[in-house]
Length: 446
Image 1 (tube, rainbow, N blue to C red):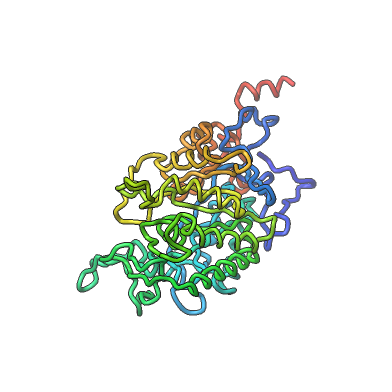
Image 2: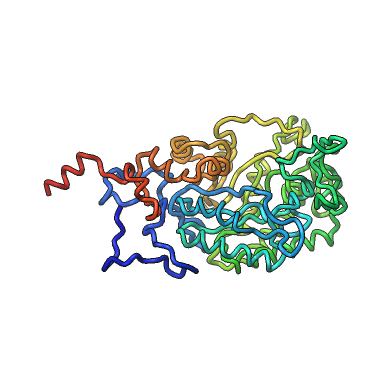
């Protein structure tokens, strides 16, 4: 689609920190059926969506980049936890090619909350400064810059997943990043209770004191403020995958006897306190999201034969999401698992979609917020089918984006939908951006 610029001027993106040609409307946006008859019936996947009653964030389509840990930051020194040009290229390619939201990986609010020594952090201003050019680039591509904030809890001070500990003498099964050269902090791993994720292969955490909990809440406040100043339009709380917030929610990992343990109300207390702090810290025009694991996939189920909760599951998740909506979240992303090595998961295409569907169905009209689904959603027809059935409102993808950075554009072609592409790439998409022959003939008659 030729760009329309008066007097042959190659217009740049307004307010960008450097020149780059403008793509109007942004890449990934379905084009008008006035010019493109193929778009007479646009799939839900490429229809816009407004998120938030106050923020009113406009998604150009319903395909989101889920946060993906890359274990690619400095582990010590002044640039510890800082994103780099690698992350700009890694995330920028998704924004350039049409993702509605591009989310930075799980970013720790404290040094001891990193999953590995090479994870992203946001506990100081230098880290915020490193984020800014990445958020700027995402924004100038017409994608929404977002970040996921969290604390790894009992699964911190671990190694990057590709490191082979069998080569160490003597060979190790352990995932622990030991203190010293490996950059770990085994003496400062903390969790709601002093229970290891796996006694043989993971660090042994200490039980968090009330002072630790207060410091964690303050760290979330400070990191949220830094994310805002760096340019994030969405900040997401990571309450999934067996990390710190999920540790508090689940009876499997939370055996506390104070106000933060025991009953469901108590186990939800810290996550809800943090959500309220994040909402109070963010400007009203910015959006607060949350990701949860809807189930521990505990072999004995969510309740025992007395009806008491023994693991985290869908029944508690429904209650928690409703309380989180009261605390101010605008969207919830539904994942599962990660809190116990005993989990028994029935993996298959879209295996987590039923959790999103159940949570979405549990919300009243007044509570209704968009629900995102994730997990082995690998093609456009599958994603569109999930939306058409009302199982979710948006689709989050991670590994599929790694396999195919042009996922949004390729799913559009799969669904016979014309979306705009970056002006610099349009010559590669002439097949998609060509009117049907019958329509071309009609145009010539007139």
